[in-house]
Image 1 (cartoon, rainbow, N blue to C red):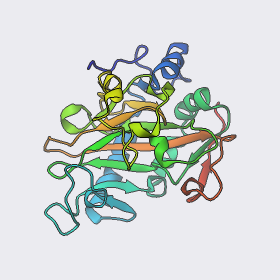
Image 2: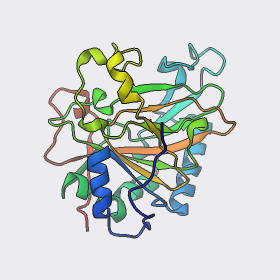
Image 3: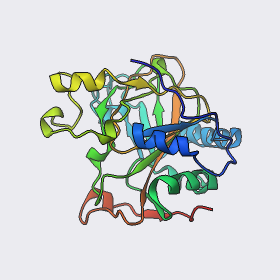
Image 4: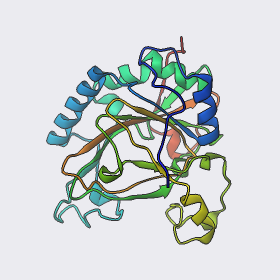
Length: 270
């Protein structure tokens, strides 16, 4: 397993969008990193809101005990049972999250990947991931599209690191190019996690690399990109903000969970 590198030199937060090289990297690998895209002001404001809402347990949220992933407490009454895994509906928690997703340096890049009209579904991601020490869980290999129902499996998630992320505190791992691979149902378990015990999956997982981020770095990744996250073995909580986007001509399927929760039509890119 190697390590992640960016497609080009760091891009300043005020710049117009992806370079041609970064767009090619996303198309080939299913992800691209922009270093330092999130300003210190954005990161500080989001972190303040996150810590306050964690301390007050402001709903809606998800506890580690509710997901039954490896390492999670068995029940809410178990030791660490009220360890919060994520704060849901981040968009509605504070105006700073709306300012973030509507920022031109986000929208310009999304338009390069999705087209001129970009929509943010509120039912998916739209959260602050809070990987806490001691009772954090391991998230198995999966593609986000397993949860979602749209006309096309073509959505992009934007992941902002509010602190440094690396393997020991549970950073994401990705398989470059997996968004272009075709898998059959037998390569996934009943919960649609990519099976590590399946021989056909071994060469795929051997190509995995960690996505190491510093505070303010942003990962753009395709909904079909295989990814995984281990437990946080450090003493400090890791905070990450993630939203998902689609093009306006890729609506959710009627009657699906993806159709619930509303959507935000974002400003056209400049």
